[in-house]
Image (cartoon, rainbow, N blue to C red; front, top):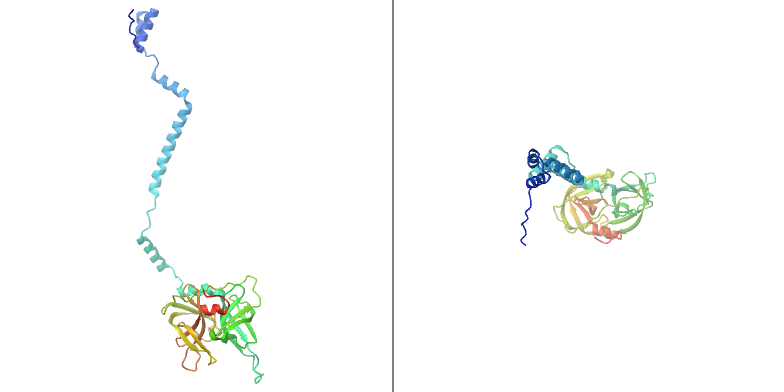
Length: 313
């Protein structure tokens, strides 16, 4: 038996069929055919009512995208262009023109000032001149250990009955002679006690790489005045000099032209980074006047540190 072919019906066709099955009046049937099954706005309202979470998610996503776009636009406007070498040069030039910067010698001296000391000695009475005041000598020194170890020149303290060391803050503490190297005119002192806040040792630098022409700074108490600072250059290396006793020959000395005078002995010779490279030992003068004419001599810090039991760096 042949079956009739089935077709899907459109809403309009279904409406006609429904009208025909219920035998609506002709006018009502035509209205039913003309009217849509479900109005489109009603469909959307129904979908939204059924999916409120989806609607909220879409709204939140749209808000995030909007805020992100606004932020990106603001970021592009606030991006600082990278610095160029021209900008850096201009800033440095402006600083040099408007600021008074400390000299390199001043910075080097400031670095060692907390470690610099003045050495004052009292010598035994001269029995032939009992009416004269007890003779005194003044020199310089440098703290090299936190335990109060001080380096100075031997000729500053030799034969002293009493040794007094003045710290950078004016505190005066008695010291004892803990060691000596006559062949280097070096003496090692030890403070009898430490101040409450302790002491600050200087930084030592080996002479390796030191060359004539390198800038150096001498710090100390010339003629008891100070602390005093003078600057110059290394003018020679490996020099020899006959010590004040006329017998001891000092060797491997650093020659420099920073001003030094009696009282500078035992003080530090610094590089421009504020590190101790030598201990001032003597000045040269072909006359009988013990004043500076342009040549000072210092013991390399390796020799000085060895005198204090510190191995060369």
